[in-house]
Length: 113
Length: 112
Image 1: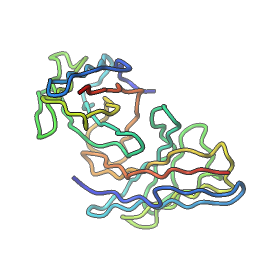
Image 2 (image 1 turned 45 degrees about the vertical axis):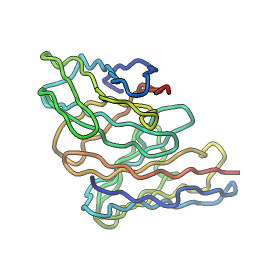
Image 3 (image 1 turned 180 degrees about the vertical axis):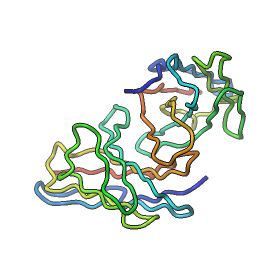
Image 4 (image 1 turned 90 degrees about the vertical axis):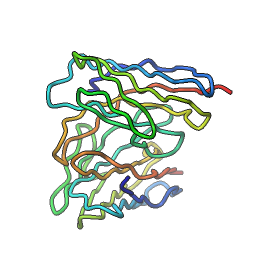
């Protein structure tokens, strides 16, 4: 299957700092990528849809100024958590899609102290 | 909101078949049934998908009822490494912008 690479796998930061997470499609072009967040023992929650060359579409309740998404090329989307706070601590997962299937990155565990 | 209903947990003996049910009574004609699984602290892994015919691949089989209101994922010979949360999802086929909305899934515990 197609490969989606996500980095870093784990990050610890201080409250108030910003953290960038990268998601790359390695062997296919992803015009659309999705970003999810997952709290412990819960399911994945869709945060936003990232479209190459245009603004991201955010799900209801997700702050677009808090979670900045950039999709500058067909193989790279980034999620920046700005001014992170402890409540932003979570597992963040990206996915890239062909028309048929979604392929997921390995996730980023963010811990904000 | 998720459009599927799954039991929260199931047990299965190692080496036996694991049958995971899913109800999707409001599925529309252009929606496919997808199955993914998530092992702890990893990204979800694609398993299989189908529209109305039964499907089989190297990982599993998917049985969809004739009215398409429910389906069953079958792992023919479960191993300990199959312990994971299994998600059944309906999604419109085609169109890269079609989202995958996750429900609560089924935690399958394979017992030695």
